[in-house]
Image (cartoon, rainbow, N blue to C red; front, top):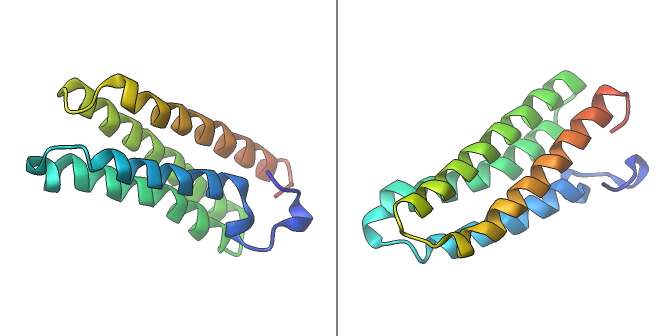
Length: 126
């Protein structure tokens, strides 16, 4: 994560930038799902992937750390929803694990970054 003095906007947060890349990955993955999943997994994966950076941005825009932490917690929860939906696509044999695994790894990296950001905020940094 960039040092606190360099962060003027949520767009400066490395975790936000990383999860925006994940959103693009998820949109590309959902293009491979069957049209019958337009209102199921396709919409669900796309919606929840966008929620993660949205929660981060919303939290960064809050006036107090407690609200920011709450939004980061929501981002973490949305990330777990995303992982679950990706795993459902594998279980339904819509996508092979070899195509899903990079996004799951990306989710893991973002999750660790969120954890570190939360630790930093609780320690008085961020």
